[in-house]
Each structure stands twice: as structure tokens, then as C-alpha cells.
Image (cartoon, rainbow over all chains, first blue to last red; front, side):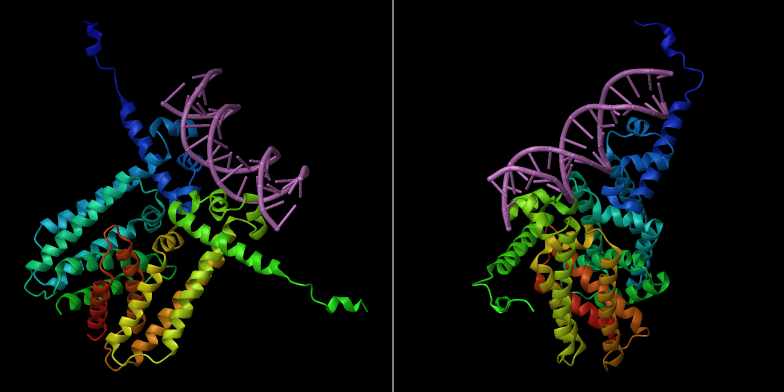
Length: 205
Length: 205
DNA sequence: GTCTATACGCCGATAGAC
DNA sequence: GTCTATCGGCGTATAGAC
């Protein structure tokens, strides 16, 4: 068919590597800009400026502004579910108190990573149907696993595990997020202790 | 000095009444529009359209878009603090469980009023320094009163009432807000029971 | 006092030079 | 492949007629 020269590789193909690097630069810049200015005021011009490239170049790597945000959110969701899955599928502590401690610590770590960006993602991100679907699924999975945990654990005495699971997840996620994001943030270690105590006393009746 | 006719009232002054009525119409329209579209996409044109007036008229009643939002938020804060103050300064139930029940019910009522608007207010509202200050003060007041309550109550056994108070307030406010705002909202009565149980068991050790 | 029409600025996205 | 320059659209806010 075509010339055999097709098969000959160019001497190097650094473009894939460089391109991926630039993508990451843009995403990092976007994370900062969105965190500082919010989504609406986090303009593509600002992102390009912070990434050290021109606006035109930015649009070679992402089709539009929403795609940048979507990738940031996807990234975070993937990180979170990966960590949660790793913990939940492995061997868990026996006592429910220590299990909750693992939960809370997981949430604290996820949120300490980049609280400002996370706040923006959770609160201001334009909620496309597809993204809402993804978020809802992740949440439902976590609630479901927690329910199973509550149902199977000998220490646990709750009348309605499904409701209890929803309450536990909401409390951990929102509480950690909010209390650490405040201007005078609570001590992470103390928050962990108190929240674990609250949840444990709750489910052990 | 000037003519005594000054003292004579004009036959009627319906303009103040009508003007106030129009202001309220605009605010109500804005609440709906913001709730439906969010802050950024809740344009002044849409607000004017929904209020049944022209964009030009709108700007006779409010200097700019932010002022409309600020008044909505102020209104909500005032309503909330009024209700909270009424409850907290009056006679409270003896048992801490029933006190928490009052708390939770208060939050549920406040949030059921207009969940969508509230979500927008809490999450998307541009946080001017002055508004942040107001919100922070309201929150601190509630945490403070809760701390005093915990310190003075015979049933309560917590090592650190200040931290516990922060946790309690955050849990109630955020939990109620989130669990009722979900696509498949939790039953309000059951939420109340479970949350009260959790908080009570927590602080009574 | 309410309207219509529009000025003005900003932003996302694209075209086209290099 | 990156840049500069710019288009098109939208949104706030104002001007001026009635």
C-alpha cells in the first residue's frame, strides 16, 4: 500500500511526553486558579497565564473550559474511590471504633490535599448530568458498603442500617470538609477523635 | 419659616407601599431564579422578567445584582437567628435529648423553607468580606451558646465542650441541609430521630 | 416611574501568522 | 505547535423617550 517508510519511527517522539506534561501544567494551574477565584471567575485566560502558556495553546489541549474542570473532578473522584476501595477491600480492624477512625482519617487526608480546590469542586462546579451521575454513584457505593458493614458487625446496634449509613457518610464527609475549611480550622487530630467517638457511640447504641 | 402647608399630609402616599411591594416582588423573583439557575446564570434580565418588570425598573430598586443577593442572604440570616434566639432564650427542655431535638427541628424547618435557594446561598454566593463576617458571627454565636449549654448541663460528659459544640453545630447544619437536599431525600422525621440519637449518645458519653 | 434600546466590558473560543 | 489578535455573544448597567 503506502511506502514502507511509514514503519520507520521518527528518531524520537518526545511530543507525547511533552504534551502530557503540558496538560498536567494546565490542570495544576487550573486547580490553583479555580481555588483562588471560583469557577466563574477562574477564566481560561488566567489559567493560561498561570500555566505560562498562551490562551491559544490552552485550547489545543482542552476543547473548552468545562473539560478542564471535569478532568479535575474526575481525577479527585478517582483518587478518592481508589483510596476507599483499597481500605475497604483489605483487612479492616475488628472494633467498629477503629473502622470509623480509618474512615475519618481517609476523609481528612483527602481534604487536606487541597481544601480550596475541593470546596470549589463540590460547591461551584457546573453539575452536568454525567458528573452528577458519577458523584451519585460513588456516594451510593460508599453508603452501601457502610450499610453492609453496619449490618454485619457484632458491636453495632442500629434499627435502620440504611439510614444510619447515610448519616454516617454525610457526617464524615461534610463535617471534615467544613471544620477543616473554616478560617480557624479545628485541630485535625482532635476532630478525628471526637468524630470517631460520636459515630461509635451512635451505632453501638 | 416655611409655609404651614408643609405640615399637611398629601392625600395619600401609596408610593412607599407600592415601592416596597415591588422590592419584595423582585426579591421573590430573584430567589426563584437563583434557585433554578444558580448565581452566575441567574441574570438580572431573568429576574426582571420573572418579576414582571423591565430591567430598567429593577435598577431603580437595587443598585446592582450583588445587592439583591445580599438582601436575600441577610433576610435568611435574620430569620434563622431570630428563630434560634427565640428558642434559646426561652425555656428549654430539661433533657439534653429534647434540646437537641429542638435544634434539629429548627434546622429542618429552616431548610425545608426553600432548599434550592439555600443551597445557592450557601454554596455559590459571592463571599464579600462583609457577608463572610456576618455569617461567621452568627455561626460563632450559635457555637458559643451550644458550648455554654453543654458546660452547664448535668447529663453532658465531654472533655472539650468547645470542640464538641463545633462538631454538633456542623453536624446539624450540614447534615440536615445535605440529606434533605439529595435527589432521594431522607425522611425528615427519621432524620430527626437518628441525628438526635447520635448527638445525645455522643455528649452523654 | 416604567419602558426600550444600547453602551460597555468581559469571556470563551477561533483564525491565521510565524 | 505556539503565539497574537480578534470575533461573537452575553450580562450588567445606563440613557433617554414617554
